Image (cartoon, rainbow, N blue to C red; front, side):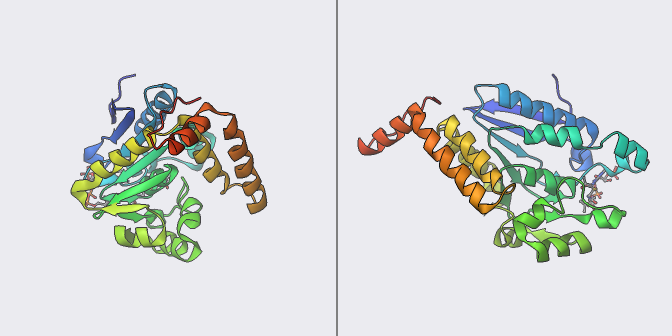
Length: 258
Ligand code: CAA
């Protein structure tokens, strides 16, 4: 499929997906979300891809869902049409890790897309926000749910009720992003992190993603049991034998995803 609103490049086992609607600050319309979901599914099915990075432009990761696209829609249009549901569910089905590399605005659906990724690396110019309240709506892709889990109720309420933006420093302090780097270093840092992940055993990487995500869906006791059982089950893999043997032999492990 040829894409018009995103650019997909695969190099050294890392897929880089660049959101590319510069005139609309990468606002998420049906086409962009559809193309992104399709590209991510393609990455999931492409054996060459071991980690994915999603980024935008220097000015904007994405300034939200496309307001021009939504402005004339009725309740029936969005409810019966299930606006954003198929694409977001398709994105969440990706089992390979996804890093969001955020520079500039990550607002509304843009902040929510970043939070759908497995972790966020931000440039020092990044600005996060859930300004939907200014449009007479609320967040629709996780801004009241994932943001609350990421930064807690007080800050999530503040962001969603006032619509204020949070800068990169506050976002890191609050636990929304894992690292902040100078703008010029953003892609080097994100691609470096992706490269590191790409060198691991893919089986183990997918187990980590599933286990951490499980912590959001279950009780601590059940989550710990899930973790212990997947830990146990990895002893059936060749990569566990290789990883531990390599440690003892003081060499780099050669994982084979088995
Ligand atoms: N949808 C559609 N177009 C958008 C857009 C959006 N979310 N954000 C920016 N654009 C467009 C602007 O309309 C403008 O296009 P034109 O030149 O054709 O007028 C272009 O991008 C550049 O934007 P600005 O001129 O506004 O740039 P700025 O630097 O002055 O301001 C900004 C930047 C503060 C990000 C401002 O564009 C803005 O506030 N954008 C909207 C942010 C927002 O409300 N996001 C939430 C959307 S709703 C949502 O996301 C729902 C959900 O949870 C799923």
